[in-house]
Image 1 (cartoon, rainbow, N blue to C red):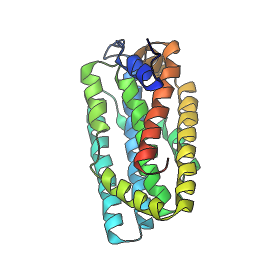
Image 2 (cartoon, helix red, strand yellow):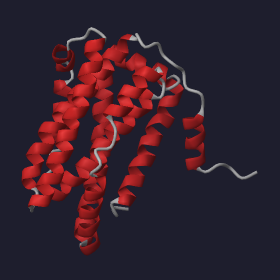
Image 3 (cartoon, one colour):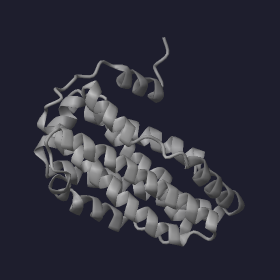
Image 4 (cartoon, rainbow, N blue to C red):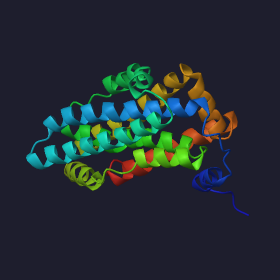
Length: 234
């Protein structure tokens, strides 16, 4: 019998039964708060980066994505309030970590901003959805709704593919930028987890234990590679 391919192995890991944590696990509130500030930070970043667009169509598309992020924030705010949590103090402990990530990955061009919107933000979503896989349905449903597509991904793909098809230099620059986004996302995620014990317990318990963290990050790499191909960067 032939050995399974890496993709097959990843699929088997992903399909394995996942432990289910209690809805009142202390890490759930922390997780919601982290997601909520992520949406707020994304809103401000996207509105700033919309100014980099070379035309009105681009500015409107980026502004529309930003507006959707605030809708996701409100969903998470409501979920936290139902759990008796004041969202602003809960979010405040994650401001530094997320702002540091955005500081280290500030785009210098419109195309870099588009790649970050498509690849960088999706990396965070992949990470959070992996964690959600081990959460109770009523919690996981909130996470999935908050991370749902904004509906503008095809705009980004079309813009980037057009640019890299006509310029090998742009393709090389943006491929390097995309790899940098992956590296910074994983590094900052590790720093963030190191500072928040409740989140560590949530991640370790929800993903099946420490032995599954390797496959966990392998799957992030796999989906990142898929998105690079979609953008014409590999």
